[in-house]
Amino acid sequence: MDYTIQAETPAHAALIDPLLDRTFGSSRTGRTVYRLRENHPPLAELSFAALDLEGQMIASLRFWPILIERTPAILLGPLAVEPALQGRGIGKALVRHGLTTAKQLGHRICVVVGEPEYYGPYGFRNAAAAGLVLPGPVDPRRFQVLELVPGALEGVKGMIRRDERPRGQKRGQRVA
Ligand SMILES: CC(C)(COP(=O)(O)OP(=O)(O)OC[C@H]1O[C@@H](n2cnc3c(N)ncnc32)[C@H](O)[C@@H]1OP(=O)(O)O)[C@@H](O)C(=O)NCCC(=O)NCCS
Image (cartoon, rainbow, N blue to C red; front, side):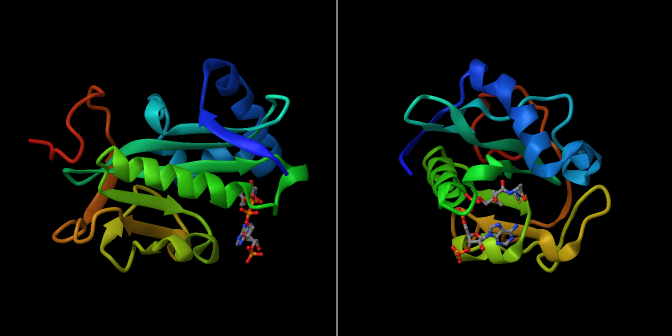
C-alpha cells in the first residue's frame, strides 16, 4: 500500500482522538501513560501522520516530553494504525521514522509502554529492570526504554514524570 509520512497538521490532530478510540477503545485514557500526557501537548516536531494517496490520515504517532527524575527523555506513543490497514508495515515505518527524527533532534532516551515483541527490534529493553519507575500501575513486561545515544541511561534511574518546562529548551539539558 502506498502512503507517505508527514508532520502532523491541526487538521490531522482533530482526527487522532477518534482513531485512538477505534484502535485502543475509550478506556485508554485511564492508563498510567496518559497521566504523563494530560494537560500538555505532544512534541510538535515529533508528531507524525501517515497519509494515503488521497491525503486521508491512516495512522498517527506522537511523542511526549518526560523527565526521568531530572533527565529529559521522550515517551513514544500513542501509535495507532487504522484497523483495516494494520499488519502492512505502516506502524513499523512510523516508529522507524519517529526514532530516527528523535535522534536527529538530539533526544537521548525514549520510553514506551507496549509489546516487547513489537519494540524489541529497535533496541528497546525492559525499563523496570533498568531502574525506571512509572507514577502508576503498569505491566512491567511492557515498560521499555531505548538509549537513542549509547550510554545515555548511565546513572539515570528513578521516577518518570511530565516535562512541563517551556518548549525549545536545549535537548538533553538536565533540570536544575
Ligand atoms: C500495534 C500497531 C500500531 C502495529 O502497527 P501495524 O501497522 O499494524 O503493524 P506493522 O505492520 O508495522 O507490523 C506488523 C508486525 O507487528 C506485529 N504486531 C502487530 N501488533 C502487535 C502487537 N499488539 N503485539 C505484538 N506484535 C504485534 C505483527 O505480528 C507483525 O509482525 P511480523 O512483521 O513479524 O509479521 C497497530 O496494529 C495498532 O494500531 N493496533 C491497535 C493499537 C495498539 O495496540 N497500539 C499499540 C501501541 S504500543
